[in-house]
Length: 416
Image (cartoon, rainbow, N blue to C red; front, side, top):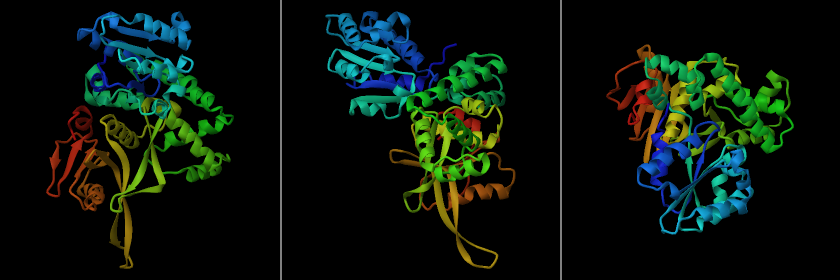
């Protein structure tokens, strides 16, 4: 089964010949090698590039072990360059296995005959800051696990059945190719324990492994809930009877972000047009990994739906914040007081902005009014959308708020 990953392949194609090193990043096992070594390779050959002009190496292959020596690698690539003056495409998988790989890539960039593409699969390479190593000479293409659109295109069948499997086991390509539930769970559990967790611990030389494990479980069990390191510290002490400083928790969360296991959404004061630094939300890159962390428990569809919407927005290239807006209300004593309201997502792309609410169901008028309240408290003309789990027809009310169904949003890439 070949999943075309058209969104990311298109980015690679658009970046051809831009003079930068194309760096494919993303959580481990999300398909970076397949994107470069299969899909992009096929694109090149189908568009007339001779195989002699594609210099491709999988550096984790035992046969290529000697290529991990930077001088041997540079000599090998130089020996492959034809004398016809045409562009040669250098594709290096697991490039972090090469000693001083940053220097190697910077050296390759100096040869105008070469167009360079790399990927890597450990946390040393996957650090979100790796592009800065190239001092502005790297072009990052971040690869996410399969979107629901990609997943459903591959499996077909009943959409609701596909949705249930997707939010339970996630979008890592190997999971899609694994048939039984037991094997899916085993794969995800082993991947978390032996790959993701091990990478974070070894890269950062962590001694308190139990503390890291507990923190990851805490974040996995509270996706979509506002929190901060100090609050998590208190949770550790009260619920886990464990003492971990908030500064250590902040470091651990940073390590998880560096490995792309989680992303952080900051809280944004819509009317004040400023970030509120006291709390933030964390979302997991893949729901299957998150489920494995919690031993396949806590499959609450409301929070999972919010996490998947967040991931979809990020895949579509939006910057995503959690919105806060204040309004006024009268209490039982007839006193006017400020009431903070949350907007699930404030998304931006260039000059475009959209306010989005995630609502599992809108069973009655009162619930619908409640979900719209924060959106109506925003005094600007940017679009306002409610995404609801129910299978409803898209509609826009007289106040300009559009309501669309979750699956229509996920399956239609132009739904926004």
